[in-house]
Amino acid sequence: MRILFINPNATVSMTNKIEAAARAAASPGTVIHSATNHVGPASIQGPADGEAAEPGLLALIAERDADADAFVIACFDDTGLETARTLTGKPVIGIGEAAMRAAADGGRAFSVVTTLSVSIPVIEENVRAYGLGSLCRQVRASEVPVLALEEPGSAARETVAAEIAAALAEDRPGAVVLGCAGMADLAEAFAARFGVPVFDGVVCAVKALEAQSPDA
Image 1: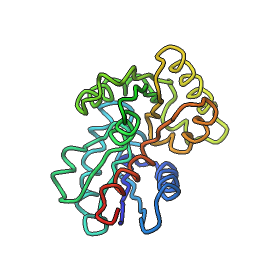
Image 2: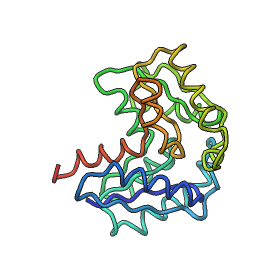
Image 3: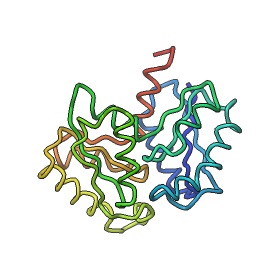
């Protein structure tokens, strides 16, 4: 199975992080590729950035259709997801939907920890659209800018950790969902640190698509 991860923003370091996380999660026989939307914004923080990213994202879906058996939109807002699904007969999944559905498996409650507050309304709308409103305790912002997650030595990781701690204390969820593709390298360490399941959409998307594969 060939899975193409499309980063809707133009930050190549984030694309590389996403691809590395996906490759680490993939089963033998699953081939991971990635593409960057070089005409998109540097990061997607709220609906305006999402709208700006859509044309390039959708063009990549159309251009690369022959190169993949399935596509992943690697933005937690699931930017352009419904339109992308009209452009190909192949599976298209967003990392937001993948992570939240995995977290909610078996009726488990979860909280989402994302980057900035401007992203909360988009994610809350998606929660409702996916029928997960009764299980999502809260969508919380760490107020970490997306690109801070790409800066070596920044305080971003500990700021996100502090918001996870607050979510666990205040929301009492059974799981935490990391609400940004730039957090793809943090889930395992946070799960060990906090002793609860922590879901990253990049890994969840790989597992969801592999489960749908005829070879599964």
